[in-house]
Image (cartoon, rainbow, N blue to C red; front, side, top):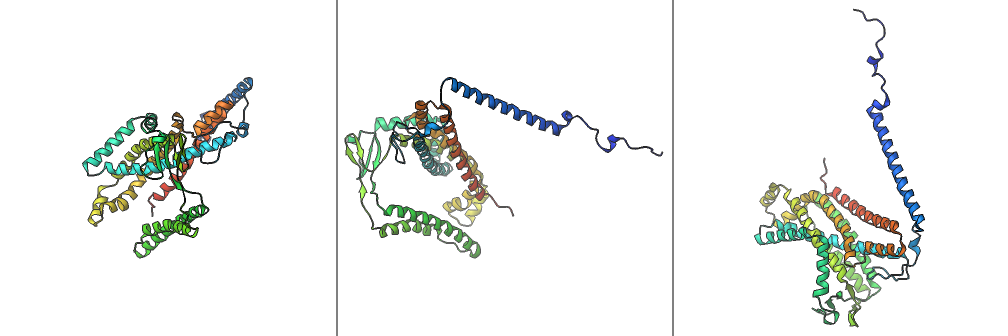
Length: 398
């Protein structure tokens, strides 16, 4: 039978449908609609907020940062007085927060790794003690732990006149830990520079040692040489600079100590609470990461005659780190964000300083926005660093 005429248009291409029945065009329309709704909602909230602030004669903007703060801060890493601006006060608070976060993360990783390894120990007592630590510190809220350590320092330790004095230059009282430090000298900054140069030299030494071992199969004593560089360069700089030995020793004057370095009870209580609490979670992360490595890896290493310490260092941990790093990053972020609880025990972190600023200026929206911004930046920097480290630890496919 011969076909005559043209084929219907529907056979050549699908019949044209309205755009509201086309899934692709409809999805674009929905996205445009949602974007407009979000924009309108944002415009309404911002305009309404500005109108309310204007009605109540509350100034807006960040001009208050240049005004005199008129309040003191008990602890500061940089010079600060009540005559300085609110901006400098907030910088002091941010530096205090960064100090707690940096020291806390370092101690937490070390303590958590040790407890996680101890949890898997074949020694019954060590394993059970690690398990008790994990259960106790995980189940007590962090805020209660901060209150406990804070009360312990102020109610158990003696007054400065009766301070514990285990050896020369060290005093422990309810005003904190005070210890002697070297007197300021011009050679100290060059020693710090020598240490930085040593760290750079160790980095390139490790890279060279890995390439050498890959080519020749001969290992290099990287640890001992690196330790010699990191200690030797600053020591040599110290000797060239005249070998200064003067010490700034704390002395009791009035109701407190003068001289040396004073680690306040607030800082110590905050650090202890954050480290002990977060380390319990890190220990579980480390334990899970180690247990994720096949037992066959351990048995193969044992069959080669490796010692248990070398098996853990060379076989288990390098593989376990690929599992440990992602949840470990989350715990680091939790520690940084939990440091905002310092306001409860009087440590002048960023939240505490920003709160005082808000109370004095009335700039609540700007103050809260600055808090959010600072913690966002700290979290993003921590995540970026850990993501780079995670990429280095991943297996490279060939």
